[in-house]
Length: 278
Ligand code: NAD
Image (tube, rainbow, N blue to C red; front, top):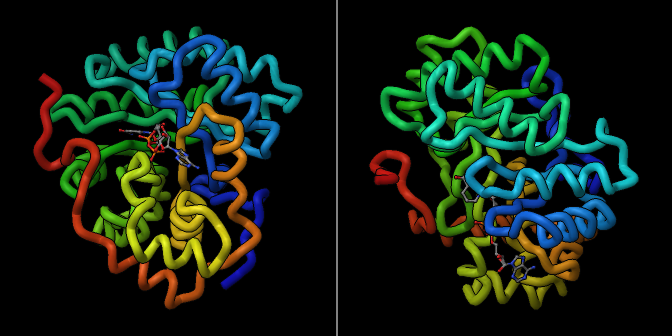
């Protein structure tokens, strides 16, 4: 296993570099809460922030970016187009609103948040336009399963570079990970910590003892050794620091297999094969 460091990145298929670990900000309140969390994260070495128009905190994300000493070009900022805004014109408009909220002149990664039937291919054309106009460095999707990606492949000029899925040891996404690798799509993990729902697992606890690391660190290390980008959420500075402090130990192949054995198709969120936001 090659040594992985804080500064390592994943290189997306178009050459754009994406930092391995990012800060997720779902449910971080707009204003000081999200701003302070991001400033703490940047201090701790994070260079990647994951928000969405749906989270209602893009303004606070923008304030943090401007308040930080780290130059804009050193940061990797993701936002997402929400379900109500899927469509060609609608997505272009939603992008401008997000960019106004963020106060940015370019974005690093724009994602389609959910594959709403009948609407995401038109939205994908808008993503391609934003990409070819240079407004966004990389484009991708979230919560897309094989059938959704195949529909995009059948009409696209540019294939998605990233797919952000619910991913943690209880939902290891083996098939989707293989499919994404085959198409050179970087997998990114949402709810990587299953919102705390994995910390008591005896297998995780045994690895905590073995490595002298916390449950969150064991799980996030499993992500990065699987070459998955991961975006744990916290607004607590000590946890933000803890979640990026995963570069000073290594899980053995046997440790990785033990964590793999927890895979049991358990989700926190909706199943992309069968979901509704009504
Ligand atoms: P998560 O698995 O990151 O869990 C977050 C929760 O875990 C926190 O609220 C906190 O209570 C706890 N936690 C974090 N670090 C901890 C630590 N070191 N020790 C103990 N507890 C700790 O869940 P999430 O926020 O749902 O997912 C992460 C990010 O993924 C989100 O913030 C968001 O950016 C993104 N996301 C995307 C989608 C999507 O549909 N694309 C859906 C959900 C989340």
